[in-house]
Image (cartoon, rainbow, N blue to C red):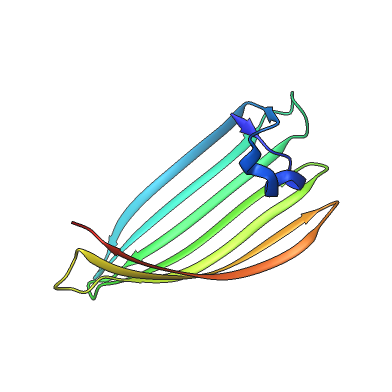
Amino acid sequence: MPYWPLDSMMQMMAGPNAYRMKYRAALDNTTDWGPLTLRLEGVLGKDSAMSGHPSMATMARAVMLSQTGFEGIVEYNGYQVSGQGSNRSLNAGLTFTPPNLSSLNLQVVYGMEWMQTAMMNERHWNVTTQLTFTF
């Protein structure tokens, strides 16, 4: 799989400069809990150390659906490379689907990202809004 060192993530459009074996395990679960439906997703992985610095990747996402058309979202992503640093993000948001118009939904997500490497120590936040219409 393609590999980019953390310090060159801004140059991803130029293509990868190396490749490495990546190992990932994932778990998905959907549970009805009274009037709510809870979806949990998780990914944990490691990249091979044979071609450079070893790294760990984690992702966890929880989505809670309600009968009123609201869906809460919480998501964490982390990527840590031994000797290079880490990139982490935390997002929380809400999706609204009108009960009588299931082809339309509006999603608003607030996110924070932390990038720490030898060359940068940055923190960014963003708000993403998406309106979708399914036909």
